[in-house]
Image (cartoon, rainbow, N blue to C red; front, side, top):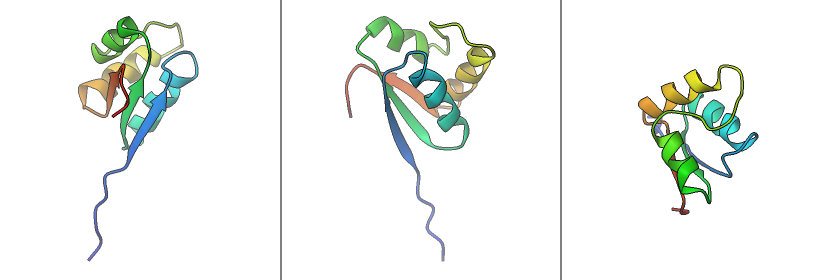
Length: 77
């Protein structure tokens, strides 16, 4: 019988590279924790919002955060 394994990914840095990458990985079905040193960035992402300008990123982040697929933190788990 196949075993269902939950895939977990950590992305360090939620800037112009890290946040879009984390959101895309989360959209693919993995549970993603995004780490950033800025508490303001972490709060913004956890509210389903973005702090950078990237086409369509706001909707993607809002969706994956609302599903619980992406969470942000200032500390490594």
